Length: 464
Ligand SMILES: [Zn+2]
Image (cartoon, rainbow, N blue to C red; front, side, top):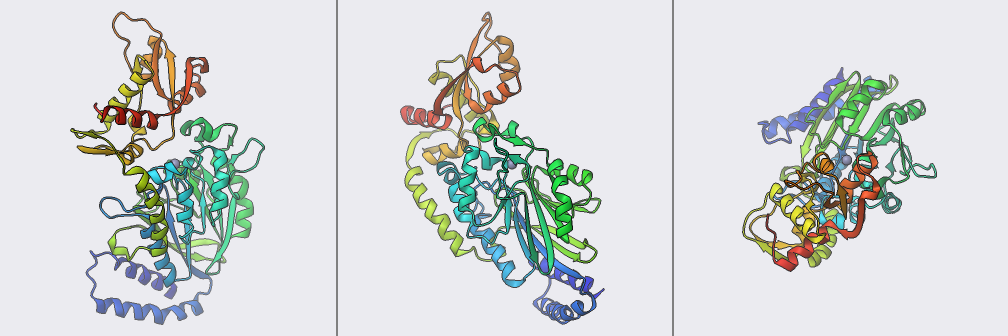
């Protein structure tokens, strides 16, 4: 009972971090004293239960710096993680994947700086997200060599049958709790990465992979965690189909789970994206019973209230930003009007069609990750608008395919074939699903970003 009261008090104390809590300093001091008084007692009464704090991030997508509101960034996360770890010895830090892709520093240097920066954070282990495959799956070996924490993956195999991560599972002991972690990656890797990201790989359903490793992990661990880059819908399915998992720390769907989801006994958590939040799951584990006795979870926003950013992390972030600034702050053109995503997509389509002498250009709003304000256009703006390394293709299609594949109407009286200039990412999907033949695709080495950049530099701007 005292252990439970103790855990509750710790949670109440945690809530004091939020400014909304109107506790006086006196009340806080009193409660703290109570916790310290009860702590030694609780171990004497209930040596079987032990506390664990899981701190988790996902889909940080190379958002190394705070956003426009001053929220997030790896130095803020690092400061928070190190602050919690300085205060207590029962902390486990996990990252659920998609560490790279989303900002110029990642795109320009093909993901490597992100792992250099993450090495300054006290991460226990991570899992491969689908975006870790963006620069070709062979590049993952380089990430693994650089990262000082293990990167798990139990369900993606190379053409020669080796697992792509450092290991399928990870074992550690924290505060006397033996912990086993199984890492799984998005099962729809083929559908959501460019060809170089998945060619020749075998991707296994995560439920199959977890079932294969679970007996061994359950035997060796008091607490079983699945670190999943499969999305919250898949995580809930996994919890239903494999009921013997204690915790699923998730990513991929960018879901803001302010409170954990509970499926049977399985606790499912996820902490949105872009380094805005760190998820915090407080557990009381019944060690001999090998079960979670109590839990409480929430998301901690990485704003000014969580304490100072970590200077070591900030220095590594700044090192890469300095390099980038020299390259990317060059002004390449200007726009008189604000351009939203729809306007930019129209502009890109016109540029592609013109460049490749095609009847149509095609681009999708999902491939565009930024908008433009009136004024100067820098190289950085172009990288932010087009963060993905997609190469240009021209596809020759019938009038019917033009409508079904590209949602465009053939001009009156014209029968085709029609030439559509687009990027390999879309064409590859169509070829793989049998909706387009490879013979219909002509591939060009130029990246879509380079084509847009060249157009802006040549014409002085972007017009919708
Ligand atoms: Zn993902």
